[in-house]
Structure formats: structure tokens, C-alpha cells
Length: 405
Image (cartoon, rainbow, N blue to C red; front, side, top):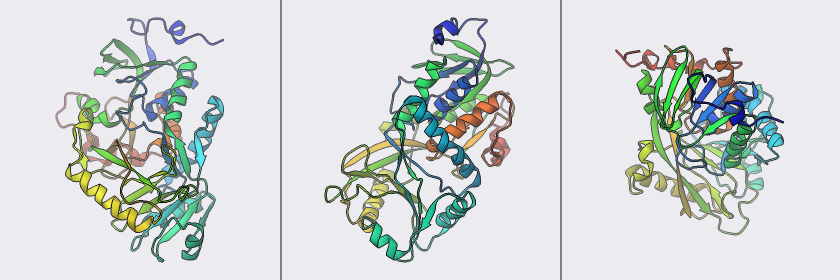
């Protein structure tokens, strides 16, 4: 029988207590990383500033899209291992996490970039898919009304992750395996060194490796460490649309659009609310401080313009949905200029590892991200080439000029 965490590590704040890994941020990336670390036998502490569960960050809610159809090779590689790891977590926790719905990838004319690049990756990795011409779309998906010259393929393994259950599954398994999860413990100071010292609102931790997965709070955590990556925190509006007739959308697959302006819109089968389909704009115009997310008024310019865009979008392409949102929820994206996440070691302190800026598509990748970050904390090279996700792609590797490092 496994000893409880308190029996394994009776004095986690003591002067002699040294952890292998401390992780800051218990969203999906931090929780998945903690799971992998404890499975590797690492003495691991996971710190979270809020009481769990909460809706203050980017990992809450019931549903997220999962898909193979990425247009970048590194994400396609990560999804190749993420899918079986999600299924392994399902089996380990006896919790249904993945609902297979299929996913339509659609490029509206005159664009074809998302369709072509994603289709190339599907072919490269030999994933089951099918190209749908106009007649096939009309016959199989009367819920959708798109131009004849739109480009569409089906990713048969696309689906929905039950997000809140997935997050809880990682956290519970981490604790059951002897990991220490500390809630309502805000990080106040990080002191680099051979042993990194993390001072919180409740104590002090010393660790050989520090992994930072702070989500929307990344800049607030990284700037005192001399790093200032070009991140934007945006409030995202998540509208739910009522079907005109009961059951009209029940068999419609998940979907991702490349719009006429090259922006993306995605949609998920009803899960949270019966009869309502979740179809948001993939992005946000209202930049915010994550500590004051809900002070952005719903009459803000970005909010109004996005909702008007989405109402017209629904009216044009989804004839079986009412074009006025029934429910509106919010979350946050932490965006990089190129929409690629950041996953790298601190340029000066290699035992501080950072993952942030997931740009609205990190949840599905979490099992692979957690494995990579764990390997880095063990002194191993990532098993997938993540060069494209490094600090080096930005000016001065994101180091603050004349910072006292």
C-alpha cells in the first residue's frame, strides 16, 4: 500500500526538504506534467494559487476539441502520442474523457491554407480521413450550408475531450501516486540557483528543477526572472447557439473553419447544455489583466464586434441554428504573435523550465507536453523536436535588457 504524501514528505517546507520538481500552475499543462513526474518517481510539488476547481484560468469548462488534423509537424507528432495517453488516463481512472465525433476541417474560399496543410499532415501520418465534395456535404450534413467551392475533409478520429474530468483525473492520479498538490498558495518570489527557492504565501520550497506553467499569469511570473516574452492575454467569448428543432444538431460532428479573413471558428457537439451547440470565434479582441478578467464590460468594442461577426456567421453557415446566442461564457487565451506555444528552458537558468502561450490550442496536447517537460526536468532531451517553440524565435530570446540576472 502506497504511503500518503504527508508520510512520504513529512516536512515539505523544512530546511532539509529538497524536491526534485516544483511546478507552478495546476491548469491542464501543470497537472499533466505533475502526473508524468510522479510516475517517474520524482518528488514533486504542484502549486496552485486558487482553490480547485476554479474558472479563473484557461482549463475550466466541460469540453475541448481534440484532433489529429494539425498543420504543423511537431503538433502532429505530439497528437500521435497524446491520443493513446488520453485513452490510458481513461483506463487508469475509469473515467470517460474522449468522445469520438469526427471533425470537419473547412477552408472557405478564397482560402485553402488550413485545409491543404492539415490534409498533408493527415496523409503524412496516415490518419483516417475523407475528402468531402459539395454533393457529399449536402447529403451527409444538412446542418451546414457552405459554398460549393469550399474545401472540406473529415478527420475521423476528431472529437471532444471532457475537459473538467480530464483535469481532475490528472490531479487525482498525481495525488494518489504520492504527489503533493497545494491549493490557494500564491507564488511571491522565485530565487534561481543550483537549488531554486520558491517563496509562496504559505511557505518556502527548494527544488532541483522548477517548471512554470502559469497560463495567463506568465508575464507576471517571468518578468522578475528577467524574461518578457511577447504574450497577450485575451478574454474569449464562448457562445452557445440554440437549435431550431430538437435534435437538429445531435449528429453533427465537431468542426473547425478557416474563414474568409483567415481567422478560425470552431464548433463542438452539444455536451454542456442539451440542444445548444458551442461555436466560438478562435481569438479575442479584449486584452486583459488576468487578475481583472471579469471587469472587462460586455459592451467593450472587441466583445461587440466578435459577437456581431459570429451572429452573421451562424446565420450564413448554420441554417438549423438560431443566430442569437443563448448562453455566453468566457475564458482566457494567452497568445504569442505566431500562435505557437512556448516550451523551453530559461536562457540563463537551465533548471527553470517554462511552458506558456498555448494560444488556445494547448489542452489536447497536454499529455505530450507533460511528458516533454518531465523529460526536460530529468535532464533528458525532448523526444519530439520543439525547436520551433523556443524563446530563441523572439528578440534577444525574450531576455529583458540590462536585467540583473
